[in-house]
Length: 164
Length: 251
Image (cartoon, rainbow over all chains, first blue to last red; front, side, top):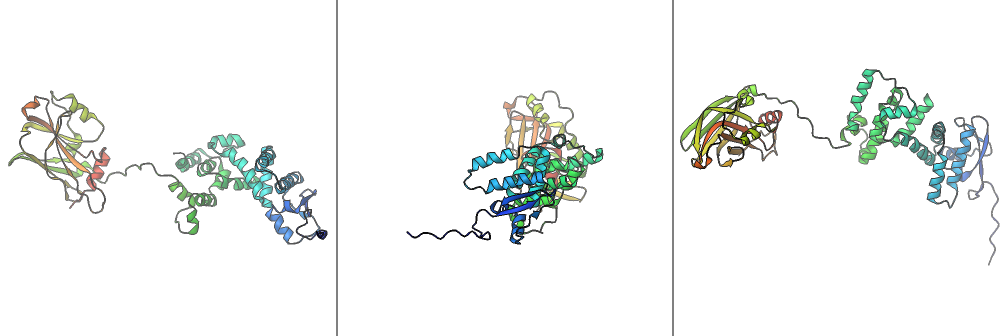
């Protein structure tokens, strides 16, 4: 039985599992993320391809607080051998946060083009809207309606088709 | 608050049409975003994926398209009829064997007004029939005439409309053959002929009934106090009757 050659330790090898990408948040924090996890973001995928080797990728639209969580999400979703049910449970916990934080996640997922995160977070907010009347939506999101009575009437007439 | 705008723009594609319509009614900011035809295009693409193959062929917005077709329409309200009873007059003739027993030109408004006062002695069955909501045109027959079931009674009804000065046939030549003893009516019918503008309409009859007094019917003779014309197969309101008449083959 011949021995296999020792694995290459070149960092540039795509099969090397531990290549880390450095990210910098808008407020100057730096984070490291495994390449496999980073590839979940189409934005990062494009940037990695452009071979910005070494220097941290600046992400001016994402704060450190949020970027930390995004890294956590992507790492979890890049983990091998996690079954669907536990991943779903983990996701549910992940979004079990304040409304405002979910909104931040959406913005980050949008900017970084992470479909799984976008899907998860947008559905959370969509669930807040689904099945509610306009009045209930206003109450939920604490929105002051600034329609004049005439506009209100016009809008109601315009949309009655959806509720017949 | 433009970052919230971005949140809404990301979330809206996940909503169905009803929820998106609700969003349009929340406030000005939500409305401005939700009415963007892009979201409605996404909804249309989910609902009818094939339309993506013809991206620019609809002359209306995707919003309008979705609104119109996302669900089968309930029965549409009838458009206002183009005809009114003032425009109409009816030529009604009835024969037994060769005797003309009834021959009148009845103006539309008379048939529209109906029988104001039923003579005493009419059955409850007739009252119930005349009171029920299905629209019918009736006219009183004064003085009353009598008819025996054994006689061959035939009828013809033509109509004329004054707006176009044309004539249509309601009943060409039909025998009275059916008696409804519950409502004391002796009836004739004939299938209507419609204008070539309306193909595929068939099986709609004009019914004409002699309304008779509730005396001893075993004699085989009836005492007629009124005439009824109806189109119960298809038209059960005044507007429907006027539409049906409008669709006849007026020549």
